[in-house]
Image (cartoon, rainbow, N blue to C red; front, side, top):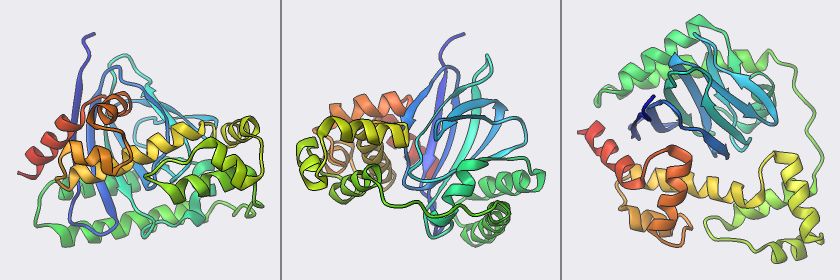
Amino acid sequence: MATRHEISAWRPAVPGVTEVLHARFTDHAYPMHVHEAWTLLIVDDGAVRYDLGRHPHGTPRDTVSLLPPYVPHNGSAASPGGFRKRVLYLDLTRLGTDLTGPAADTPDLADPLLRDRVGRLHSVLAYPGEELEAESRLALVVDRLRRHLRATPEQPTPARSLPRDLRDLLDARLPASLGLAEAARLLHADETHLVRAFTRAFGIAPHQYVTARRLDRARRLLLEGVPAARAATESGFYDQPHLTRHFRRFLGTTPGRFARERRATEG
């Protein structure tokens, strides 16, 4: 089967929604990465398999998948014909990090009413000028998500650890880089142990985590109309080719095409 990628993304004027992404993939596979937003996913055709926090999951028909921020995940087609999906990225004003544990434990929600509400919200978001209806529908979606997550027993807050300390350091320096030697010195740890501990805890290496966070920033800038070359440097990439190489690997398209699809959608 020939490779087929279709991507449309935009940032609506709806508080709490950082990005809307509609995509059709036949053979693209997302590598392990993270987002700083909640990923609310529905699959309209085919199915997706993914690993979240080192545990395998999938998207059987009529489910809603909610992937928490900062938890590494990947994704690929679970059916021969690929998949077609619609995604909302919600910032932490809509769902806080206190719900990360329950969402990581049960990311796939078999709830026909929630699935219908998410689909209707996507339909409204396709039309500029309908922001009030979109906000109203989003409120209903978030309320139902909270009901699911609150029904899961809360997990105790974990004690501080070396991997989380390193993640905090990386976050604090973004989009700039933090050298491994400096991180090891600040955390009073051996460099090799630091990399192994981070990878073991989060299922992703420190450099992969930083790249994913930079890509999130680049996507936001592109959706705001920032030229790709400037978006690259402001996101921490060396130059536009550096951004393009990683962008294509993660999203199956180039920054320029991603931006053009955004303009076409908004137009």
